[in-house]
Length: 59
Image 1 (cartoon, rainbow, N blue to C red):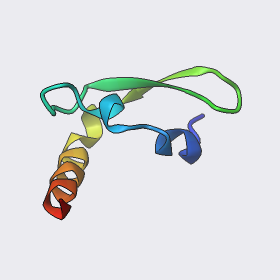
Image 2: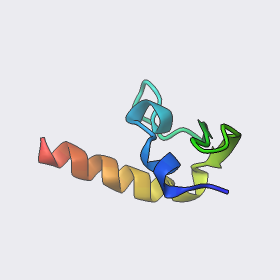
Image 3: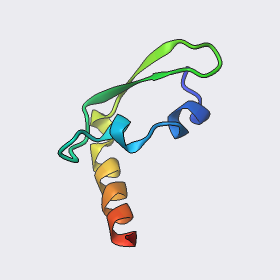
Image 4: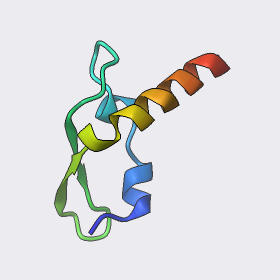
């Protein structure tokens, strides 16, 4: 089970590669149980790119 606190701990390098492309997936470790979770990002690529554009416009 993914908790929002674990997802919020993701940083840019977890989601985007060196060329600023969205990764297909990422791993995170549950803070409470220390279990590894495989998080598929492919289904939210559009949302992540929109968020990246929004962040870049704020700079």
